[in-house]
Length: 104
Image (cartoon, rainbow, N blue to C red; front, top):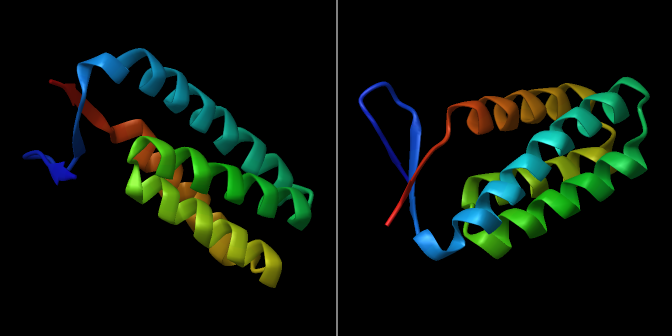
């Protein structure tokens, strides 16, 4: 991952994977909403489940940062650390909003 002049994350991805990647990013944005609802309800088991799903999705397509956040959410859910989970959700949301993918 690189960043451009305004510190937006930039990833270079295979053009053949564009449709799959775009679908995956839509799913991750939906997961952010689900995470926020689960955190509001303090549903730690669902937060852990979502964290694991995000970890797997990120890893399968080479989104290391997304994968790392997912793993951290999963661990924080086990510890019921609402402050950390909230910070991680915000980080994931910001990353997804600013991600710039260049297909080559």
